[in-house]
Length: 97
Image 1 (cartoon, rainbow, N blue to C red):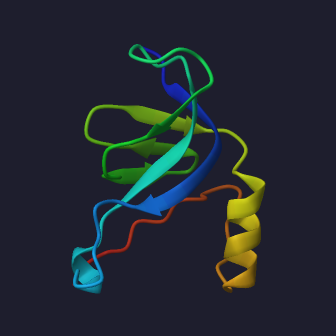
Image 2 (cartoon, helix red, strand yellow):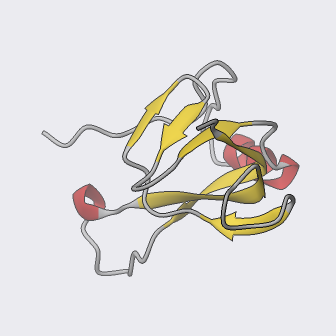
């Protein structure tokens, strides 16, 4: 099975509340899916929580997404907030100690 391609993507919080401790926060991807077995090409989706990430491949509960270009407004938001997005490895998973 090939990976689902996600274009114009961004990282978003997943069911976090103002009371969610930082170490318990979960994140997901939002973007246009291509090659997804459940959605037509170009459908905007929100993924299940991110489980792992290696280079431009992001694994969620049931799917591996290959990241295309990130959403321009997301990149601008990252820049304005001092968050560097590495084009080789754009999604980082925070390790809980």
